[in-house]
Image (tube, rainbow, N blue to C red; front, top):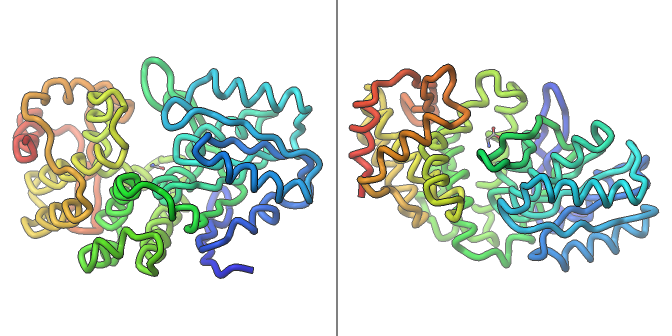
Length: 359
Ligand code: GLY
C-alpha cells in the first residue's frame, strides 16, 4: 500500500484524513464492508477519474452510480442536490449505502449535504481534488448549498467517515488554482502554524509545486491545524471561528465580484485587511503585517482592492451571517499564531484600516 500520513479528527465525530501520493486505493476500505451501493458526486473536470474510481469500486460493491454536477458555486444549488437525490431514490439507496464527494470544495460541500440529508444521513467519503478542497472544505463537516439570498445559507454540520487526499490528483491542476488554494494554507500559518510561513518564505516555488516534499508537508500542516480546531469545536461555538481569518472582508469581496473570483484570491485581500485591523486594534506588530505582505505576494495573491468600493463592502459585511446581533466580527491577530475575535469596532477604524489596503 502507498505511503501516507493519517491525521485524526476527534471530538463529536471521529475520522481519519489520509494524505499521500497514490492513496486513492484506500477509498474502498474507507467506505467499509456494510455498504452496497455508492454514488460518486463529481464534476466533468474529473470525469475520467470518476470513471476509473467507479471501475475500481465495482469489483467490490453491487452498484456504483455517477452524478455529474456543475463546477464551482453552480454545484451548490438545490436543483443539483435534487438531481442527486433523484438518482439515489431511483436506485433505492438505503441508509447503509454511501456517497463519495470527488472534486473541489463546492462539490464536496454539495456531496456532504446530499449525504447528510438522504434518509437523515448516509456514509460519506470525501475525495478532494483541489488544494482548497484538501486543506479546508472537505475536512470539518461543514456542508451546504447557496440560495438566491446568499452563500451557504442552507446546510448542516455532518462529518465524513473519511477524507482521502491524494496529492497525485493535483499534478494537472492549473497553477492559479493551486496559488488561490494556498491562501487557505497561508491562513493556517498566520492563525496557528508559523512553520507554514517559514516554508513558503524559504521557497514559494517549491512550496506550491505538488511534486515536492515541502508541498506535502504544507498540506499536512494545514490539515493538522484544521483538524485540531474542528476536533475542539465542531459546531463553531467558539474556537472554530478563527478559521474565518480574512473571511469577513473576503466574503464581501466575493459578493462584490459576483462570485467570479476564486475564494482564495478574495481571502488574501481579506487577510491583509485583517492584519491592518490587528495593527490598529493595537497589538499586531509592523513586522507581522509585513510578513503577511511578503507571504501573500510570494504566492502572487493580491493585497489590495479599489478604494471607492468601501461603502458597498461595508454593507455586504453587515449583511453577512457572521454579523451577530448587528455587530461585525473580525478575527485579528495579537501576534502570528495568536488569533482573537474583534467585535463592535468603530466604523471609522474599519474604514481607516481599509485605506491601508486600498489600491
Ligand atoms: N472553512 C471554515 C470552516 O470550516 O470552519
